[in-house]
Amino acid sequence: MDQSEVLDRLREELEIPFFNGTIEEREYTEAEYQKIKADLVQYFDDYVRNVEN
Image (cartoon, rainbow, N blue to C red; front, side, top):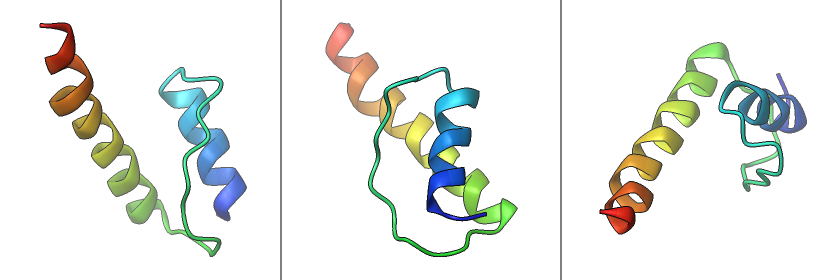
């Protein structure tokens, strides 16, 4: 999948309709997509949720 497909899928699966992350423009495998998604969720947990508490 290409850059736009990865970003579209992240918006849909994570329910962040206006997400506009910056990733390299190239082809991504499913494993790479899952790593990007896991990293994004981890970032949210580590930095965004900690601000709320």
